[in-house]
Image 1 (cartoon, helix red, strand yellow):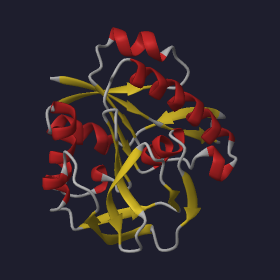
Image 2 (cartoon, one colour; image 1 turned 45 degrees about the vertical axis):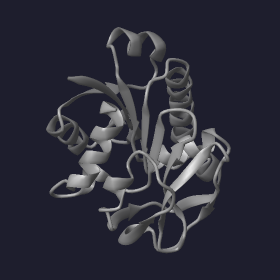
Image 3 (cartoon, rainbow, N blue to C red; image 1 turned 60 degrees about the horizontal axis):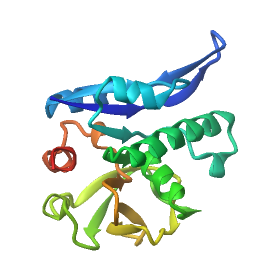
Length: 209
Protein backbone atom coordinates (compact mmCIF):
# COMPACT_ATOMS: atom_id res chain seq x y z
CA UNK A 1 0.00 0.00 0.00
CA UNK A 2 1.41 3.38 -1.01
CA UNK A 3 1.79 6.09 1.64
CA UNK A 4 0.38 9.37 0.35
CA UNK A 5 1.14 12.57 2.26
CA UNK A 6 -1.67 15.12 2.24
CA UNK A 7 -1.54 18.79 3.16
CA UNK A 8 -4.13 20.63 5.26
CA UNK A 9 -5.83 23.96 5.21
CA UNK A 10 -5.10 26.22 8.22
CA UNK A 11 -8.00 27.73 10.17
CA UNK A 12 -8.59 29.75 13.34
CA UNK A 13 -10.99 28.50 15.99
CA UNK A 14 -12.15 31.84 17.42
CA UNK A 15 -13.96 30.16 20.31
CA UNK A 16 -10.75 28.68 21.66
CA UNK A 17 -8.11 31.00 20.20
CA UNK A 18 -6.45 28.12 18.39
CA UNK A 19 -4.80 27.88 14.97
CA UNK A 20 -5.67 24.46 13.57
CA UNK A 21 -4.82 22.18 10.69
CA UNK A 22 -8.01 20.97 9.00
CA UNK A 23 -8.77 18.33 6.38
CA UNK A 24 -12.06 17.17 4.89
CA UNK A 25 -12.51 13.54 6.01
CA UNK A 26 -13.69 12.76 2.49
CA UNK A 27 -10.02 12.85 1.46
CA UNK A 28 -9.27 10.03 3.89
CA UNK A 29 -12.23 8.07 2.54
CA UNK A 30 -11.17 8.63 -1.07
CA UNK A 31 -7.57 7.56 -0.58
CA UNK A 32 -8.55 4.50 1.44
CA UNK A 33 -11.12 3.60 -1.21
CA UNK A 34 -8.46 3.42 -3.94
CA UNK A 35 -5.99 1.54 -1.76
CA UNK A 36 -3.67 4.29 -0.53
CA UNK A 37 -2.63 5.05 3.03
CA UNK A 38 -3.21 8.78 3.78
CA UNK A 39 -0.66 10.54 5.98
CA UNK A 40 -1.41 14.08 7.12
CA UNK A 41 1.41 16.60 6.76
CA UNK A 42 0.84 18.98 9.70
CA UNK A 43 2.04 22.57 9.96
CA UNK A 44 5.27 23.44 11.74
CA UNK A 45 7.49 20.37 11.47
CA UNK A 46 10.71 19.36 9.74
CA UNK A 47 9.17 18.00 6.55
CA UNK A 48 12.32 16.39 5.21
CA UNK A 49 12.80 14.12 8.22
CA UNK A 50 9.04 13.53 8.64
CA UNK A 51 8.49 12.51 5.03
CA UNK A 52 11.58 10.32 5.00
CA UNK A 53 10.66 8.61 8.27
CA UNK A 54 7.21 7.65 7.00
CA UNK A 55 8.41 6.45 3.59
CA UNK A 56 5.95 8.68 1.73
CA UNK A 57 5.44 7.70 -1.94
CA UNK A 58 3.56 10.80 -3.09
CA UNK A 59 2.00 14.04 -1.90
CA UNK A 60 -1.38 15.71 -2.48
CA UNK A 61 -1.69 19.47 -2.07
CA UNK A 62 -5.35 20.06 -1.16
CA UNK A 63 -7.73 23.03 -1.43
CA UNK A 64 -8.67 25.70 1.12
CA UNK A 65 -7.25 29.16 1.85
CA UNK A 66 -6.41 31.51 -1.04
CA UNK A 67 -2.78 32.01 -1.92
CA UNK A 68 -1.14 34.84 0.02
CA UNK A 69 -0.52 36.75 -3.22
CA UNK A 70 -4.29 36.95 -3.71
CA UNK A 71 -5.52 37.40 -0.14
CA UNK A 72 -2.69 38.95 1.94
CA UNK A 73 -4.01 36.76 4.77
CA UNK A 74 -1.64 35.61 7.54
CA UNK A 75 -2.94 32.03 7.43
CA UNK A 76 -2.47 31.92 3.66
CA UNK A 77 1.10 33.13 4.10
CA UNK A 78 1.73 30.44 6.71
CA UNK A 79 0.36 27.76 4.41
CA UNK A 80 2.34 29.04 1.42
CA UNK A 81 5.57 28.83 3.42
CA UNK A 82 4.69 25.33 4.62
CA UNK A 83 3.87 24.03 1.15
CA UNK A 84 6.92 25.64 -0.42
CA UNK A 85 9.14 23.67 1.95
CA UNK A 86 7.23 20.50 1.12
CA UNK A 87 7.39 21.09 -2.63
CA UNK A 88 11.09 21.98 -2.48
CA UNK A 89 11.76 18.67 -0.74
CA UNK A 90 9.46 16.67 -3.06
CA UNK A 91 11.29 17.95 -6.15
CA UNK A 92 14.68 17.31 -4.54
CA UNK A 93 13.69 13.72 -3.71
CA UNK A 94 11.65 13.06 -6.90
CA UNK A 95 8.43 12.50 -4.94
CA UNK A 96 5.29 12.77 -7.13
CA UNK A 97 3.04 15.75 -6.33
CA UNK A 98 -0.68 16.09 -7.13
CA UNK A 99 -2.38 19.48 -6.61
CA UNK A 100 -6.11 20.10 -6.23
CA UNK A 101 -7.72 23.57 -6.54
CA UNK A 102 -5.65 25.76 -4.20
CA UNK A 103 -2.98 23.06 -4.41
CA UNK A 104 -2.88 23.43 -8.19
CA UNK A 105 -2.71 27.22 -7.87
CA UNK A 106 0.18 26.97 -5.42
CA UNK A 107 2.15 24.72 -7.78
CA UNK A 108 1.39 27.03 -10.71
CA UNK A 109 2.62 30.08 -8.79
CA UNK A 110 5.71 28.21 -7.57
CA UNK A 111 6.76 27.77 -11.20
CA UNK A 112 5.99 31.38 -12.19
CA UNK A 113 2.37 31.39 -13.38
CA UNK A 114 0.16 34.45 -12.84
CA UNK A 115 -3.54 34.70 -11.91
CA UNK A 116 -6.71 36.65 -12.55
CA UNK A 117 -10.16 36.84 -10.98
CA UNK A 118 -12.63 34.48 -12.62
CA UNK A 119 -16.42 35.01 -12.66
CA UNK A 120 -18.86 32.09 -12.32
CA UNK A 121 -16.42 29.54 -10.88
CA UNK A 122 -17.67 29.32 -7.29
CA UNK A 123 -20.07 26.56 -6.12
CA UNK A 124 -21.01 25.53 -9.63
CA UNK A 125 -20.26 22.94 -12.29
CA UNK A 126 -18.99 23.42 -15.82
CA UNK A 127 -17.75 21.46 -18.80
CA UNK A 128 -14.07 20.81 -19.45
CA UNK A 129 -12.29 19.71 -22.58
CA UNK A 130 -8.84 18.21 -23.24
CA UNK A 131 -6.07 20.56 -24.39
CA UNK A 132 -2.85 18.55 -24.90
CA UNK A 133 -2.26 14.81 -24.66
CA UNK A 134 -0.58 13.53 -21.50
CA UNK A 135 -0.36 10.39 -19.31
CA UNK A 136 -3.97 10.75 -18.09
CA UNK A 137 -5.71 11.70 -21.34
CA UNK A 138 -7.81 8.53 -21.52
CA UNK A 139 -9.32 9.28 -18.10
CA UNK A 140 -9.66 13.03 -18.46
CA UNK A 141 -11.64 12.76 -21.69
CA UNK A 142 -14.38 10.97 -19.73
CA UNK A 143 -14.69 13.80 -17.17
CA UNK A 144 -16.94 16.05 -19.24
CA UNK A 145 -18.32 18.03 -16.29
CA UNK A 146 -16.52 18.98 -13.07
CA UNK A 147 -17.27 20.93 -9.91
CA UNK A 148 -15.84 24.39 -9.33
CA UNK A 149 -15.08 26.22 -6.06
CA UNK A 150 -12.49 28.90 -6.86
CA UNK A 151 -12.38 32.67 -7.32
CA UNK A 152 -9.11 32.83 -9.24
CA UNK A 153 -7.72 31.16 -12.33
CA UNK A 154 -4.43 31.12 -14.20
CA UNK A 155 -3.83 34.16 -16.37
CA UNK A 156 -0.43 33.16 -17.77
CA UNK A 157 0.73 29.57 -17.39
CA UNK A 158 4.42 28.93 -16.73
CA UNK A 159 6.39 27.61 -19.70
CA UNK A 160 7.43 24.72 -17.45
CA UNK A 161 3.82 23.49 -17.27
CA UNK A 162 1.66 21.93 -19.98
CA UNK A 163 -2.04 22.85 -20.15
CA UNK A 164 -3.98 19.57 -20.48
CA UNK A 165 -7.59 20.70 -19.86
CA UNK A 166 -9.60 23.92 -20.11
CA UNK A 167 -13.00 25.13 -18.91
CA UNK A 168 -15.72 26.60 -21.11
CA UNK A 169 -14.17 30.06 -20.69
CA UNK A 170 -10.74 28.71 -21.77
CA UNK A 171 -9.28 28.99 -18.26
CA UNK A 172 -6.77 26.30 -17.32
CA UNK A 173 -8.41 23.40 -15.46
CA UNK A 174 -5.47 20.98 -15.35
CA UNK A 175 -1.77 20.89 -16.13
CA UNK A 176 1.21 18.61 -15.87
CA UNK A 177 4.85 19.56 -15.40
CA UNK A 178 7.01 19.06 -18.46
CA UNK A 179 9.92 17.55 -16.52
CA UNK A 180 8.84 16.59 -12.98
CA UNK A 181 6.10 14.20 -11.92
CA UNK A 182 3.69 16.94 -10.92
CA UNK A 183 0.01 17.29 -11.86
CA UNK A 184 -2.63 19.88 -10.95
CA UNK A 185 -6.41 20.09 -11.36
CA UNK A 186 -8.88 22.78 -10.30
CA UNK A 187 -11.88 20.57 -9.43
CA UNK A 188 -12.34 18.64 -6.17
CA UNK A 189 -12.56 14.83 -6.57
CA UNK A 190 -13.28 14.42 -2.84
CA UNK A 191 -16.47 16.50 -3.06
CA UNK A 192 -18.24 14.18 -5.48
CA UNK A 193 -20.92 11.85 -4.08
CA UNK A 194 -20.35 9.15 -5.09
CA UNK A 195 -16.74 9.57 -6.20
CA UNK A 196 -16.35 9.73 -9.97
CA UNK A 197 -14.66 6.66 -11.45
CA UNK A 198 -12.37 8.64 -13.73
CA UNK A 199 -11.30 10.99 -10.92
CA UNK A 200 -10.19 7.94 -9.00
CA UNK A 201 -8.43 6.48 -12.03
CA UNK A 202 -6.49 9.74 -12.58
CA UNK A 203 -5.17 9.65 -9.01
CA UNK A 204 -4.42 5.93 -9.14
CA UNK A 205 -2.62 6.17 -12.45
CA UNK A 206 -0.54 9.13 -11.29
CA UNK A 207 0.78 7.52 -8.11
CA UNK A 208 0.99 3.94 -9.41
CA UNK A 209 2.79 4.72 -12.66
